[in-house]
Length: 108
Length: 113
Image (tube, rainbow over all chains, first blue to last red; front, side, top):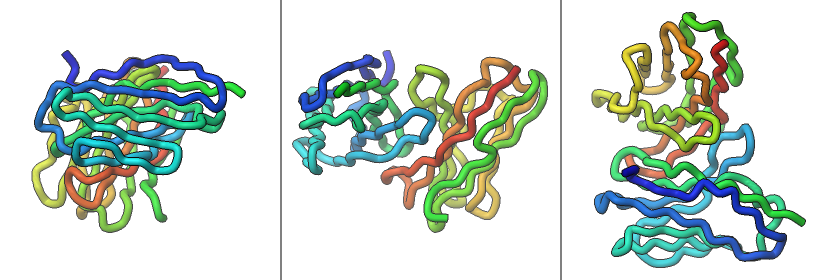
């Protein structure tokens, strides 16, 4: 079993839709939870960073962490074609462990 | 520069040759990481350096892979006797301290033919 599980998609949604991206994990020692966005042929860029259980909102993006269920989510409201990318969850104690990434396509 | 800088951005090499990939982290960042990303795959941890501590090499896939970090700054990832399965994007990242958010470079795209 992988430490971090993420559905690879692809996920295709119309512009304006609410997108839900999810990861599960097995290591209860993970303390920090992040979401990275990676455009084609680019390095991953940090999107959201959370430490504790609960929700964190930044514009159209909301990160949610449920440590009791070992489950994290990223919600994107009013999705735009420019959100089309691969979204990677990541979590760590010392080094970051990544999910495989979910490829998202938002069509006009 | 302001971000993590990697070179070369693209490298095509013949099977059996050695390659060196370079990473220049963000100034002042003490932690440096190397990851590998194959087509359609997630990021695979390779190695990380934290200050003057011994590096965590637990992710290196074979003894053909090695990395060093000179002077606590620039790092070089070396792959000896390259194989076709080594073809991937090699991503370097750095963070201010261990476990903190890490920032990636654009990657070195390696193709072994």
